[in-house]
Length: 141
Picture 1 (spheres, one colour):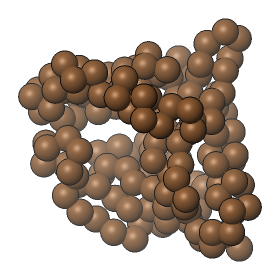
Picture 2 (picture 1 turned 120 degrees about the horizontal axis):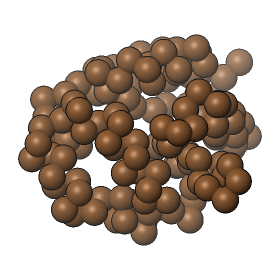
Picture 3 (picture 1 turned 60 degrees about the vertical axis):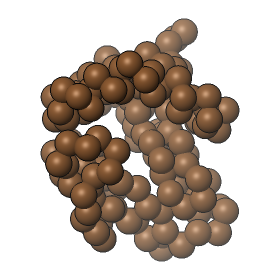
Picture 4 (picture 1 turned 120 degrees about the vertical axis):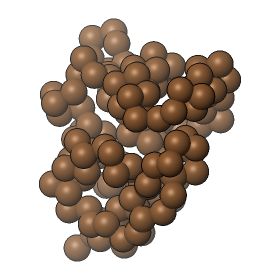
């Protein structure tokens, strides 16, 4: 699954963060640490023998949605989010929350089409690159 995280890092975050933040991500092998702590909780979509993407959530908060660029716009993200949202609703939560960055207009459009609304903005703490994080929330009917 590290290849999925490195793929989405290269295509989404690397062009928008500082060189020092990108170097730290690679040198510290943050994907390995993330997978080591949460990987058994991921819900995965596989296409053939390849992991095309995964979603990770805890309670009502979606920690991550990653789809390999080779599988973008093929319904992988939709299937992953459908599953995560259904499980979160089934657990009794009245809404689901997640974060994205202001530069990531593609993810914002994806989430807006799914009914997510912005409920907050704050400085991004993860990348130390002067980015702004958006808190998006979708309320269940």
